[in-house]
Image (cartoon, rainbow, N blue to C red; front, side, top):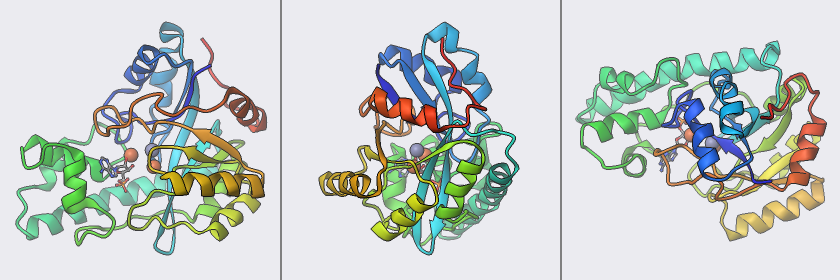
Length: 283
Ligand code: AMP
Ligand code: FE
Ligand code: FE
Ligand code: ZN
């Protein structure tokens, strides 16, 4: 079994439609993937429709952007009930706030003389997608200002950029509670990403574990060797599962499907711990 538990589609900042992500997963030789778009579940139905055709099993997931002070945390939620009011309310609020935030960032960039308009950025956001900084990057790529999203992030879009504007986010401990309340299983994404605003403390992870966090995504390209060791030690100490995944964004990131995978025994445990309201879809 080859299992990749973290992928994005055009429902957020991936560049492939949900059905195409499953087709790409089949080509990459994967047996099961989780679709984990940022702050939305809107890609689930389209992905579910091609499970039979592709032969790739689907875990309906989500990646929730959270903040504690200046620390940014991404929380993966698996097999949550899409009708659970607590979680739904928070992600709806986050998406609404992301719209105004995107406009504010683009205005600041425009005022500084960058060749970008809000209309151009809106044109790069797929219909109904969760808007994010990658869509600003896409508008800059379309105009030929930069050649890849990476370059736009390095120059203007990082968390410590002068153009950065935050949006509404739940607290990470609250987000864990909401995932659990929704019958799902919570795993902290790329816990040791070495970028500004990402210095998660062991104490915060312990607090999340006490709230019901089930695992940490140790096998992810954004965790360096030191981070991986730290993740394994924390998992051991706190009794957390260890997952691995690609964080595929189509052409939007260099990450390739299946470049990191999760052990079948670990995934079995994730499935077992969910309430079963949202089943794993098997071909
Ligand atoms: P936002 O959701 O608006 O806070 O933007 C964060 C998203 O930007 C993350 O989900 C990443 O997928 C994406 N991102 C961050 N850094 C880069 C980069 N260097 N290249 C491409 N995408 C990036
Ligand atoms: Fe992303
Ligand atoms: Fe993330
Ligand atoms: Zn992600």
